[in-house]
Length: 369
Ligand SMILES: C[S@@+](CC[C@H](N)C(=O)[O-])C[C@H]1O[C@@H](n2cnc3c(N)ncnc32)[C@H](O)[C@@H]1O
Picture 1: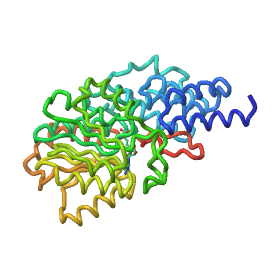
Picture 2 (picture 1 turned 60 degrees about the horizontal axis):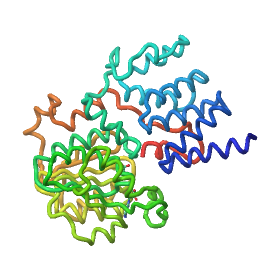
Picture 3 (picture 1 turned 135 degrees about the horizontal axis):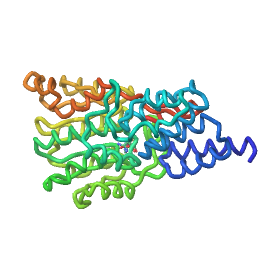
Picture 4 (picture 1 turned 135 degrees about the vertical axis):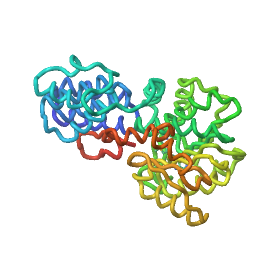
């Protein structure tokens, strides 16, 4: 295969990844690895694809190999740290093993508590298993998924349904569904255009336009044993589907729609239906200015000043009509307040978002979203 054909294969692999066609992307990277076995860019990218598919051991093996070829390879060390964090490994062990010419897989056990100072997230095995199940269906990282899970449990304290605006292939929705399945009175409402190839101009942000389908969403909901007759799937642009009958009352609203118009429309439509004490979660708050602006404009329009809690670099949430945290101060301090289980993670290590090797056209934005 000549150089141009190899480049074309690489471009195809990145495109497949970007479109969420992970099996296809991986097949192409495996082919590339045979053609270019010592190219750290290819190994790093293949590691990232494996990570997104939940294949953490293979992912770590790829990053290690890339670092064996080039210890200073751009982005790979940060990626390795993130992957080790995910696997409960201490990343420095990985590096030392490399510098000794040994194998980290020989010296570390997957799933074991990290040794030597940095601790793995305090997530239960159940949540970790769930994350592994939904990971191929989501653009969210593990920490955001764990936060959704914890907040959905909190939301069971109030009445109503669970609504997600911006579902794509259903991974984050499945995280919510896993909690809701034991709650026979509650329904999961899912809103997205769910299009194989949504036209970019349909959205006010060039970032939207992901390939997704209702079938994939149903698949992941089945994976978490959610009864499908309790899922209401509203396929189409928000401006149309939000005009159809809405849930009467909402206990949790998750907005992961990236662009200003979509986030504002979701807030205007559903916020009035959120029960007192219900939870509103915004993804992209730190990542996309449009999502953040929509929140501030909405607050100004409604004359509300929510107590916004931030988690990680991009997630944010608040409880409707919750004025202060004084009464739950102790729960914050002891870590028994569920979402702060996730805040512990931040304090512990806070893994870097994974990124491709810096190849043109794909940025860490794509990889972390
Ligand atoms: C970041 S993705 C959602 C990711 C998803 N929560 C996950 O777990 O991977 C954003 C989604 O919002 C949808 N979206 C944004 N604005 C929309 C609108 N106005 N109408 C319909 N869908 C919209 C896009 O189609 C896209 O699938």
